[in-house]
Amino acid sequence: MKTSDLKTIVAVATPPGYGGLGVIRLSGSQSLSLLRKLLADGHELKFVPQHASLQHLLNPGTAVEIDEAVVTWFKAPHSFTGEDVVEISCHGSPVVLAEVVRLLTSLGAELAQPGEFSLRAFLNQRLDLTQAEAIKDLIHSQTTYQARLAVRQLRGEMARQLKPIKDGLIELIVHFESSVEFVEDDLDPLNLTLFLNRIDDFIEQLSRLASSYRVGKLIRSGIKLALIGRPNVGKSSLFNSLLGRDRAIVTHLPGTTRDTLNESFSINGIPIDLIDTAGIRETEDLIEKIGVERTRSAISEADFVIAVVESNSTLPDDEKELLAQFPVNLFVVNKCDLGAELSEASLRFLTERAPLLRVSALTGEGIEELKQFIYRQFVAESWQMNESAIITNERHYQALEQTLDSLRQAKQDLLSGFTEEIALANLHQALKTLGVITGETLIADIINQIFSTFCIGK
Ligand SMILES: Nc1nc2c(ncn2[C@@H]2O[C@H](COP(=O)(O)OP(=O)(O)OP(=O)(O)O)[C@@H](O)[C@H]2O)c(=O)[nH]1
Ligand SMILES: [Mg+2]
Image 1 (tube, helix red, strand yellow):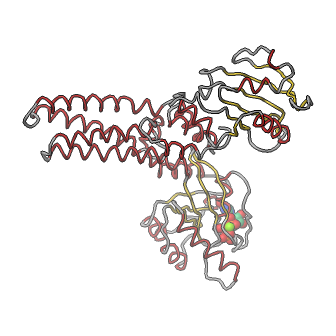
Image 2 (cartoon, rainbow, N blue to C red):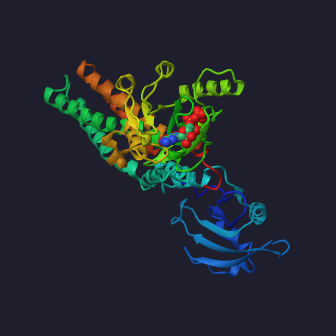
Image 3 (cartoon, rainbow, N blue to C red):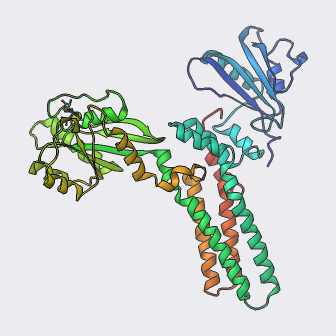
């Protein structure tokens, strides 16, 4: 579907609020003529595509000047949407922007729906669906690593990865269809082996891509990491040290932290939601009791639990009892600057349960090693290098899994001697679900639903 019959749309493309600049975007065949109506003698002005010019925007009814703006005309199809696009860079005043949009709509433009500019770009084949999604991801990225992956996807990385598989699948289907057509009996064994090998090949490649979602999901949504332990062991100090700033209150008094405290930081681009908790102990203090309850619920929600202990000579029994209650992923022995070492028995108790690292939240010793340890727990060595093949989008992952299901089914059909038509139907299904990722084989309703999650003006 082309969009040339659609109405010209308008929206403010910059965030709400005051700013140096505020950009209004028009897209559609009327874009330039609408702009002309806001300029004195606008119909006579010459506009050169892709060239910015300084203009005075006027209210056409009253001839009162609204703003001085830089306008750029992008002539179809050489624009973001593939339609005629006009960008008006006003001063970043919400009043001015609202007035310009109001005038443009009164002259016939339609207010854009969320994501409508990107939708038009998709419909005009300026972008595939993964690229449109990448724009949203790029805008919403919270770490530079997320942004880097989004930019790769924006450049069409996903379609590039899938293309050889898709082409291979089409080739296989064509080959298969001709074999089925000309052979009355079953497939000859030679062809059967060839088909099975090809299907295995696709399964292998797509599985590798799908399995990267484990990492991709982390890159997208991050890791929830809780610091727990007895009062005064240095949880808040470690919290501050990991964040690189003094966020939590630290004192020599046990029971300083009363409530859980969340802050974000990142390790090698993976977002971490770090939770400092109230030290766990039996207490009659009401506030502290509630704090300890919150610690327990933070533990149950965390992806990774770090139990902090002090490098005293022995762990007290009640502390051991307490630590044994929780699903600890890593023990961190803090205050190693003090020189004391845990006793053999205490160390054994800990290392039997989880790995152990030594740090000093005070001097920073061991903190970098701690970060890299956490990173390695979630990001396998094999993924650390090959960032071009990381799936970060749940929709892509689901489509890959469905494609894999159909391929496995097709293989099963062939092995169990079902009629070739059934296997062929599954191969067709695999091709279709693969096309869902880039949007080639998606129905309009779902496409609209995806774009409606974008923001207005994008
Ligand atoms: N020498 C030394 N002292 C530390 C270190 N980490 C923390 N401390 C001290 O230990 C005391 C307790 O630190 P906090 O970070 O408040 O301990 P906490 O575990 O958060 O304590 P609660 O909030 O009471 O549960 C403070 O006096 C810190 O300065 C360390 O690595 N070395
Ligand atoms: Mg604390």
